[in-house]
Amino acid sequence: MRFCCLSGNGRIVEANVCKRFLGVKAGVINCELNMSKPFDIELEKLTGQASYSAAVHGSGSGRRGTFFLETFGCQMNDHDSEKVAGLLLSRGYQQVETPEAASLILYNTCSIREKAAQKVFSRLGEYREKQGEGKVIGVLGCVAQQEGEDIFRRAPWVSLVCGSASYSKLPGMLAQLEAGKQRITGLDTDTDETFETEVTRRDNPWRAYLTIIEGCDKACSYCVVPYTRGPERSRASDSILREVRQLAELGYSEVQLLGQTVNSYADPTARKMRFSELLLAVAEVQGIRRVRFTTSHPSDFTPDIVKAIEREPKICDHVHLPVQSGSTRVLHAMQRTYSRGEYLEKITMIREASRPIGITTDIIVGFPGETESEFEETLSLLEEVQYDSMYSFKYSPRPNTPSLAMSDSIPEQEKSRRLAVLQDRQREIQERKHASLVGTLFEVLVSGKSRRDNQWSGYTTSHRMINFASQERELLGTYVQVRVTGAGPNNLLGEYAV
Ligand code: SAM
Ligand code: SF4
Image 1 (cartoon, protein in one colour):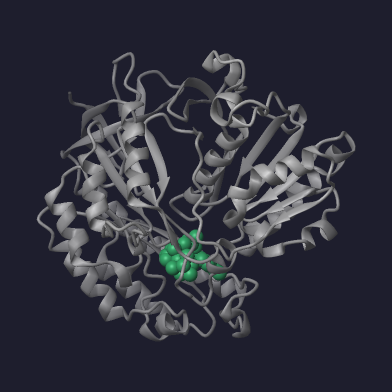
Image 2 (tube, rainbow, N blue to C red):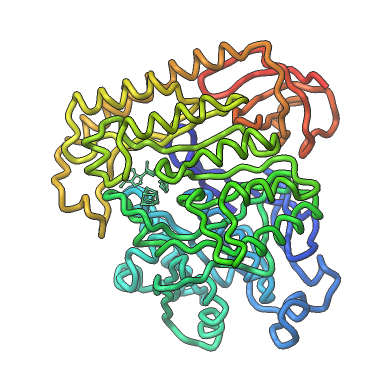
């Protein structure tokens, strides 16, 4: 099974990750990351029930085929795939590790930049012969939404095209495919539904993702998300808290609340919980030790969020606050709804908190019309804020976005130069910051074990990665104290202290 995510430098990283099944309870399936074992879940065996689908949905939906699901893109896509996999498993499908072993091949896609979208079509090309073998091929996610039925023209071997706003209709669409329908689409974005599933097949046994707000109502001029994911829809606070309690019972100790603009959360129930109240309520759930949230939009980043972090140590010391540019003129052209000065006021508010909070960001270089001096404003903002980490991108013109009408005037070579300069500056900042942490003691949730003996890794609450050595036999999933002994630009080195 291949998973992809954006790395610290904004590149897409791929890894062939197989999983070992750990348990199923309360509609959640846990799998441990494991680099060598095959992953082949059979719910009937695992639950000891004749048909898990029957248990979840009543009788009638027995064993179906096998599916292979590949994911590209952000954490929200990863989590959507976890839910899609849960949905299929609960309908009696069996998940397999290779397209060869599958009767249904699903590809959950990202179209945020052109390269990501191009990759989808080249991967679909690889699947071409598979259709001849009687396999059903489906495209999910942002490319599905963006390209729509055109995918059938470019890749006629595809049978299912479904955007994320239509995932709740997937069972019906699959039933139609099972009944022999050749082509089916789910492209409606005019919905107030959020995608909630009874079973989620989770990839990480300690940290659980939870989407609390789907879609986006901002209208950044470069961005496809409002088009591909539809309008903003918040999930009911009682449903979120119910799921967090279930996760805690299962042994998850860290939850990460997700949304394209997570802090724009607007509780649709009569309780009308504010985002900061929701953070506090999640932290109160017994068994939860860490609450993360991403991504925050600067315009909706209000003082009560900082107060909640100050009040509740379980809310992580980390805010991801994308700025995109250090120039007010460019921000205005990007339709980002704040100026450089207003953004810096939010940074001051976060920096003045009673405990240090790590701040990370996203930056785009080479937006249409960005002058050299406007780019230098971004560099000076970097110096002023001293981010803990940054994701950076070259502007990529996207279909259906307002900036498509602007002339993409910065040559590719110049975009690459600006990106390299920006990344060099940030590397220097991170090296300085990390060096100043040598000797500091951090609590780390251990989430990785290297093939090399006694080498472990994990994250601090401020989302710094630490690699450390320990003779302990099993640390995965535990919280340990690690003292920093060395530092590089991207991570810290440490020694196990307790
Ligand atoms: N909702 C988040 C926010 O408001 O910042 C970001 C979501 S987007 C999936 C992640 C990042 O991709 C953005 O912050 C932006 O830096 C980058 N991005 C989005 N559209 C882009 C484009 N057309 N070209 C280059 N980078 C882009
Ligand atoms: Fe895209 Fe802007 Fe919405 Fe983020 S806030 S998803 S960048 S439109």
